[in-house]
Length: 234
Image (cartoon, rainbow, N blue to C red; front, side):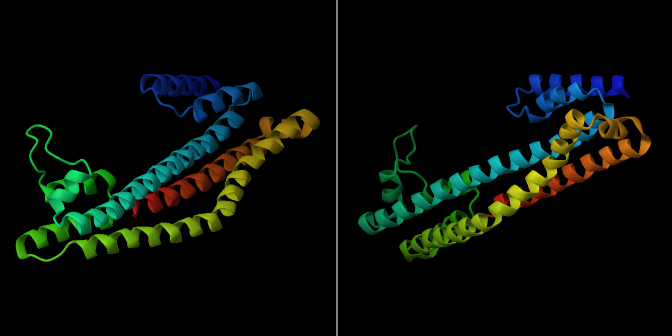
């Protein structure tokens, strides 16, 4: 058991080093867990840390999506203002700095908007890109569409921000509850060694320790999937 865990830990550290990953919660945590000298505690702690690392990655993804949505909102607000001033989408995009750098000619407006949609992956930008194609073929004004798109992003961001504020305490509570059992184990190891020995030397204790890792890691994985799903749907 100990040799297998040691091999797995070495494999994890080599993988993180080769991939130049910035997430070192799992390997560093496993290194700390080796101080317990209990294979079951290390395994349990590793399961929890795997879930924690997924959750931290999901929160970074959520923050990235928030920035992309904010960039899209600012772009659409500015575009709406310039459409009123210049009258055409091409001139408005040129004023925003979008042009064919190879030839210096006017940009293809529909192509630019489609590219921005793929860059930000924000639904209303795709809607504006589709509307620009319809306007180019059949005529009409794009300004009102861009204005409504910017307002929709703003409304969605406000609702999401309020919901995230309401959920922040719940998320923190779930993370703390996932970490708490290991704090208790550490306290038992220092204060009540006989009780800690039950967890690391008897079958029932080892099973309990493993279940703690499965439950804690599972809760964090579910939370991470929820956060990532919320970040994708923009």
